[in-house]
Length: 154
Image (cartoon, rainbow, N blue to C red; front, side, top):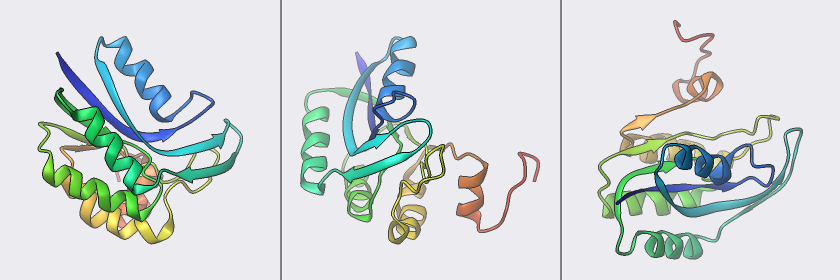
């Protein structure tokens, strides 16, 4: 059985992060494996705290999740900090997945930043090129191209 490796933050409200990914993958009958990039304290209205996963713990999660598994795709969401972006760039260079989907989570739905500012250019220049598919929303796409995108046509 092929698996999908999900690398993302944890959202205790269940509306985003690995919790939402698990629901989606389960609905499609896909077995999910996980590496948690950050623990958050948030709900639909606000983000109270973000605790990025230490890079050594993240790399151990990635190694443990992949061991002995056939992984058909990797989906990356919230990464939180530069150290974790760097670890993922290394990991994706080492592990050659058939498909890499990056959903670049830069802000919560309430507007709180979920990727530290000093990580943005490294994320854009080093991690995004490793993706098979990138799924930004309009504000995220605007950030990546450096100009405002008003709708799908512009």
